[in-house]
Image (cartoon, rainbow, N blue to C red):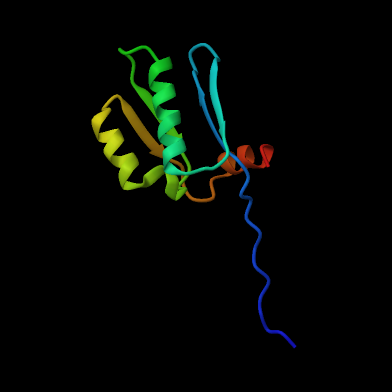
Length: 102
């Protein structure tokens, strides 16, 4: 008889990154094969190019490790108009969004 516990299944599908302009309702979205820091950084660059230079960019993220790597922190340090806000672990609205893309 095995005493191993079943592993929880984690969704490992593609990484969806999206930005929403609350002023005019437009969105920027990118779908990547993976959800790593390198893809997140590409999305930040895309967003930075789409947002006029005089405006700040507020990024709301979950606490996934991808959003908080040394590489991302260094990039954000060089781009002071980007402000990152992390949602609390298990916050309901971000979980709801994630369920929609699973």
